Image (tube, rainbow, N blue to C red; front, side, top):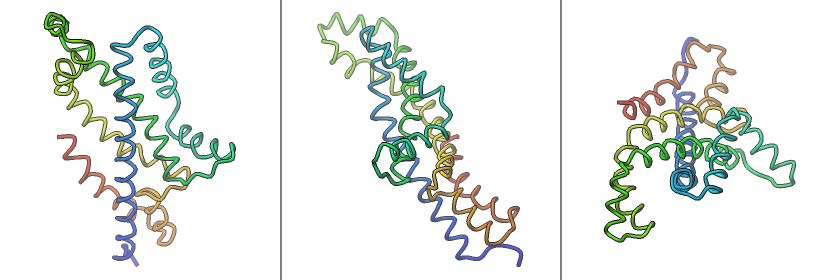
Length: 202
């Protein structure tokens, strides 16, 4: 029979839901780790910049599937049992925090130096300067590149299939294995992906 059944379509949509869950976990984790990294890179002491810079270069230099493998199998070898969701979320956090940290570093440094000097003239301490003067301006600058990178997070979350995580790619693969109609099955995951990424990219 040419085509897929309603049950198979719902199975694929279930995988799409887990793709969005993983993407949100990766972005939230990337925010929690990436923002301090950006502040360390832009306004930290020399050793903070060295540590944050090393972290960013190290993670950016490792392919995401390898990070997935290290988080899943590496921690298991150490004697800790970890689900594929937790391992994938950890890998996506490492991946997104490195890139978001670099994106936000550029946004913070793009705030004119005169703004920092004006804050100093108002006798604001470093914390007040960052929270009340710099970050509000940097947030406006960072909206476009951050939203653009969110699209990359959603697309690259499909690498979690290499550690057996049930997502959109995995569910489509399972349906294809039962129907042997790849040209019918694999276009279906494009619908939820496009429905999610197109609004973010416009």
